[in-house]
Image (spheres, one colour):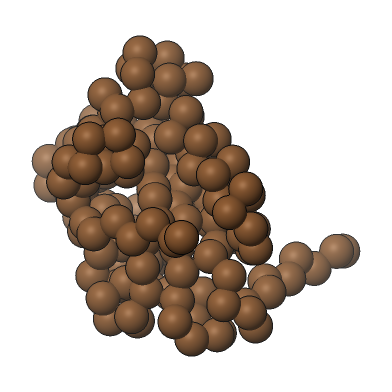
Length: 170
């Protein structure tokens, strides 16, 4: 079996993607998306990381993140997924019974792995941001990128607050 490797020995920005378990739409409701953003923000502050951009979709998450030190990504991702999973499960159990009734207590919120792409040029960064911000439009959720409330597109277009500090890399 081919083992996937995460390269975190250079100070590149990381384009990360992770999905809900079995691509369930566990992030359909706004509160679940807010949980993911809140935990992203708190974990970045704890590890001195920066968010360049993000989008929270109903069944997956994309983010471009950067750390001032090498070797932070794996720990960051473990904490982000673990803590958001715990809060989302609690939210679903307490407030969204229809989801909770369809999902076993043993089912995780997230797929086990995540995907990382090291961004080493301004051109790749722009490409990934465009791809990421285009997701809600391409999925038919909104007509314009800046209309999706759970994305950094509004910050890039209008400099509006998007729930956490955005740090563009020049």
